[in-house]
Length: 228
Image (cartoon, rainbow, N blue to C red; front, side, top):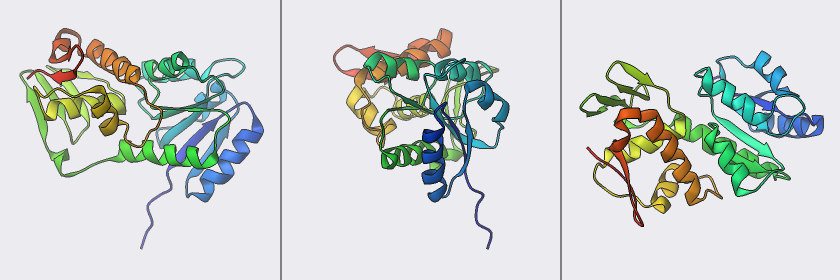
């Protein structure tokens, strides 16, 4: 019997001690860990077979935010979890707005990091019986099998979280979801998500929809809905 290959995680932090602690504990959980001590080094090591990046924000040279921004510009949608001593709500929203999937404040508990890594990987791996279907709204097609959104002939690149968000809304068009419900469904295993985080993701999603942005609307005081 062949076991499935270990999921590869790139840990990026300029503090060697933090890298060692994360490498040791995540390897014990069955992950294949590589460490980099700068964003520049991370760019040199990152290959398509990695499943996730654990990324320090404040480093000499390029910051974690800049690295994530660059990856997203290069159409690389690998999940990113930020590790940072900066823990204000604005810092968290900056992390999400550049395309991060989760945000952990330092000092962290190793147990929490492991739980959040598994939660993000579970979200991004999640496949169920619906994956054979497409959701079609005129020229907007959400392909649940390929995890792709196309408008006409244009493929719209979404992060994993953005894709989950639009799928949840589009599977029940016209239904209004409160921000709380959205957090419970899309971020159910990620603590400390605020309602503003939902707004940031919806804003980015609507921006990517361009002329079709009106597919998602906000009903003040109630929440968001998908207009079929």
